Length: 451
Ligand code: SF4
Image 1 (tube, protein in one colour):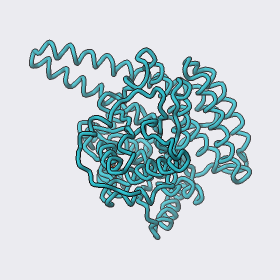
Image 2 (tube, protein in one colour):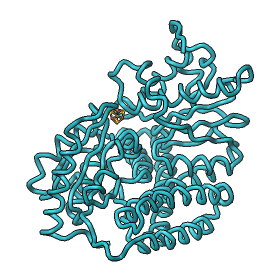
Image 3 (cartoon, rainbow, N blue to C red):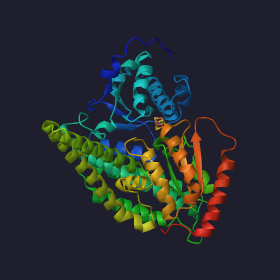
Image 4 (cartoon, helix red, strand yellow):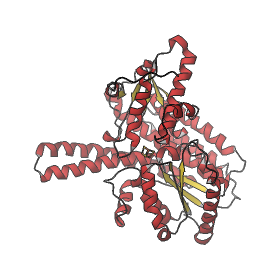
């Protein structure tokens, strides 16, 4: 693609933000494959033309338009959108119009660089002929990923709730994959089964999502879990249980993390990755927490107008968090016990774990708030090892590592840091093999978490 000089930054306000999705194709980047597809299906159920973009095919383009200092997920997603647009141009020729699409790239107001991806990508798109009219649809953690402005206001709440539900169900389907695959009777059967099941669930979300007929969706999931159980060879003994934490994009994106879960399985592990819903709950929890702090401050200052404003926020974020945790619990209550799927930690509990030893503070934010206490909890619950998966130079994950490593003796559990970029590290497999050897020893001495 030919580039020209950027002359203005005005488009950061005009072409990054919340735009109506009516009559446009909503392009969803692929982070975790199942989650992206169920979310797109949910949007389609609401009449929005949503599509999950192919991923990792445009990595060369991503590298070409970045300097190497950006976070790895920024390189990958930049490549994904440029590659998609290139292919659409080739497919449609003269009929190609970038205004027909909204590219979805959320952001966070935290202290790390995630808030900058969409701005940086805006600058790149503006520098390319035609693509300056491609809008970036951005949701932010500032308002707990509110969807207002994307569709008719009376449907916003239903879309949000169905979207959240799709995230929880996608987590369960992912966990079903990791639960079955290490014990499968026939090699390759689980991957094929889960791929097929994902498409079944897409149909279910398109059909039942708009009416919030969640029980019908869970009926289908229940059938899938029953079928999945049949793939398991009961003669294969239980294996060491490995917990995974880290940066959400790289730990969920199998190409970005060079399929680390499969590698851990190859060396005899069963893996549970931290979920996507945990992050959604964390953003709602954090907004509620901020609103409570602001309310207390305005009360001290006797600023009644502000108090009222913050109370409204407390009510809004509080009910959202309550709804999410309630909905997630209902799903796990119905499905988890059937095949021993591990449940998520509650965010409020993770904050208490951090406070116990003053390890870190939610005031500082970022995924370190989840990863640090998540590791402590994995150790206490009887996991046999923990892996921290993250992009090379990722700030929150480096913080996690620096706080956790000195605690390893106390936690008495094998731990491994696995930073990734696009290169292949020759010693990575040896490190994972050694880690798994330690995990096996831990398993032999202590057993493992009961299902
Ligand atoms: S979490 Fe890590 S990878 Fe993501 S933006 Fe922050 S520093 Fe970059």
